[in-house]
Length: 191
Image 1 (cartoon, rainbow, N blue to C red):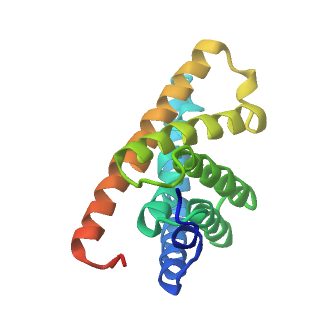
Image 2 (cartoon, rainbow, N blue to C red):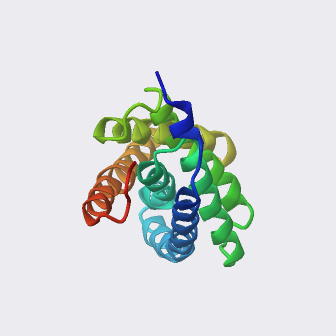
């Protein structure tokens, strides 16, 4: 049984962590736009321009898994990722208000991985699930809203694999390492 009070009630510390994650990652998202432009240009020369989005998507999604792993609160992935998108927009990111909608979609995708096990664990397995659900949810979003429907099946497979690898590294492996370092540092005290 889920302890609803422990998982839904946000402390001031939880809100502060989510805000810091959202702001910090929003800056990362904004600067990633520059890398995205250069990578897209380079890959376009060999006919693979759209792959740039999928190769960098894991970095654009890092706020969600960080938020939920550090606070262990229901909805924290959605909040951190959406705030990151808002910060990216405010900084003048090239995707404008679309960054907020993307953040919301990405946060929901990450959150689903933890929802599937009822928010009972916050380890490698749930992070793995969140990478899978994040990949699927965002890929469906891209298919219908970012023009992926026009690509042939083999190119869609390439895009999906690139996205899965990116999300698995940035939102799985990297977030797990960051979480381990922060927990060992004693910054977060769990009651």
